[in-house]
Image (cartoon, rainbow, N blue to C red):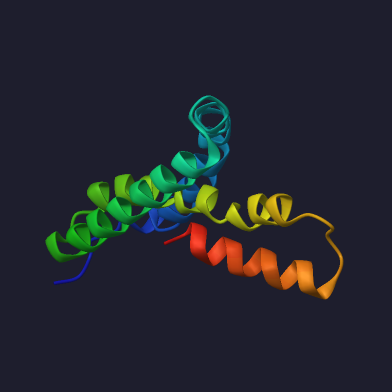
Length: 112
């Protein structure tokens, strides 16, 4: 069963991803400031995973509207990608090979 997409709206999910990225920056920053980065990154990852599961369900149901909503939730993974910058702040002395390797290792541990 194929996803029935109106011809003039086939790029809407892609556009929604970027619009949602813009719309969630401030609320996510506020959440991280108030409750901490770790919880912010965790909730961003959780919402992103829920979005991907909803997108899979929408594709199984061949529902374009549900797929667009799911893509909006998937954009929360964009906030979780910034965990590497938080890891670099924790490690400090950026620029050296060792600190870069430590930042990568810390970011991997934080995403678990």
